Length: 560
Image (cartoon, helix red, strand yellow):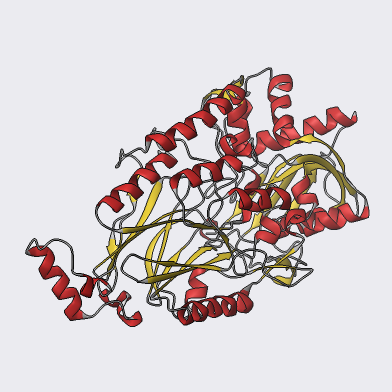
């Protein structure tokens, strides 16, 4: 990402910059006059807002290799913070969510180590991301209590009391008297992109209610005398979610800076007069917004371009990392080729060889467990979180692929319910915004024709996703379990508990689960391990070198 300086009147509208004050400040600097006098300090704030998002436990430095990006250690974030302080800046360190889940480094202690690292770095605040709910409400509360900083979210309500579940905002006063107001927003898609059971007690304000909530936060912070208003959101723009950051900025006035997360994109643009930034994910970049004499500049730092390390923070990380590596470093098998778990293009848009392997593992394990052949296997693409590189496969690598520890579940569904589930899961195919619902399958052959528009029906209950108004219009299933396809037939499907609870777009699976409870046993990563070790004799077979032709996606440019 290249640095971008936005309009110089970014702060002018909130009284922090006048042309004469900026000119005078520049003149003093050029003449070597040292620090600005106290009389002019309020007009010329020096502020660096350092931000991260979607770190997902990638808190240990990794060097770039081939097409794989490198990432920073969290200790580099602390070092960068200190360097900006040494330059004479006020420094505020914030996070835009999804810090407590994703890698064994944090998953083995249900996110607690991520909070330990952030405490050591001196974070000012974090916004609650959808995956910060993944360990359940009790662990979320424990992580919040352990943090030396507030968890912000202004749009998450307790359904029973109607009150805010988290702190809505925080005001920070800089050394020159400038007040900076922060408020947080959590994606409404949390209701189905974290396990629906974990989110069931909460209402996530969405669409017009979300925009109204944001405007109220801006107005409240202005009343508190804030010169600068910053939204630290976990909204993103790449999926249907009840309100994106760009949509919000088109409807809410008075936000000076929007620090975003959730969709793992690198963003640096101006939207409706507001600077919108996002670092991508996994500490590939550290975001820095610099307000120097009133002119804001986004100065992201890419992994490999900065070598600073806070040794005290690194010691805290190393202690946890050493423990986890000893547990997760066991080699369970190997693969002679890459197993593709990338997002888009990848498991959220098309069949991949890793999707084939994972769903075969679910189906095989369920068949072994129940002593009968299971018709099919199915997992949402969003349940696959990483690729497996050629070479040894360790337990830790498997846990990176499937970090949620979902139970394996065998569900009875009708053909009609299966068709609805796949139709809904493929709703974003052919559109710009990929979603995690896209199905990877075993024992199923289907075609999705993206030249046919997805017809939206009513939004599913407690969801942000629309049901399909025309089931079967875009998706055709040709076979399930070698028996052809019959909408009236009943099929057994090995899947994961997240989908049985109605996660992502799988409300049809929830209806099937409500009618007859699924049989559950073990965890998804255990099923994968069992298949690799026992069925594959520790080595991924050559038949997984490429996708096996279970899914056909027809795009517009494929028609003559």
